[in-house]
Image (cartoon, rainbow, N blue to C red; front, side, top):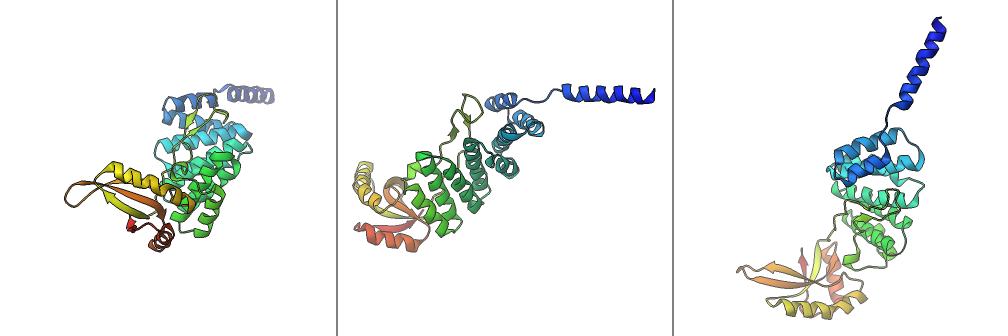
Length: 268
């Protein structure tokens, strides 16, 4: 009688395991959309344990996003890396973008550059260009000039406003029709710029910035911008700045090419 009894107990145990409710991916996604990040993290982790293939990758991605939302970039690295290796190309690209965000938060700029470069290779068109441009900025911040130049070339030297990957992931990423917000990458500004004057009249500064636009674009420099500054006497000035450079020497070379009278190298 002992063996049949053991069989019955084993069968009951298996049934109990099979009927134990598991967190669904849709439930985890709904918790994320409701900003219940602790709950979405718990449910996503459970989904990772009880799923395989792309479903597991999606759960890993959501786990990483939930950790990012709770300001835990270090903990988010492992699940985001797992998701970035998905066979689903869009999912892998989205996860790589978020992985880049986590690396930037940790000031691991070389790893961030590699993550954005991976995303760029998986994306198309303007999204790919933006990812390449962000990778270039990350590599520049890490002092990897060869990698930075390569990514800038692949990006087609987009202007500053195109250099940040969009902060949302569109429908079709396995999360349904409602876009999920991804922690956007922190824009990285290089330390030096060219300044073509500082004026009390904002309209004059904007006029000069417009006049420099075509020449800056021709040279592949970041678009001119008007930056508000406070003078020593407390008055407000509007400075016209062009380009951004990793070193003062790079800025001096660009100043020679720009040929703008009175332009100076400034540190941001």
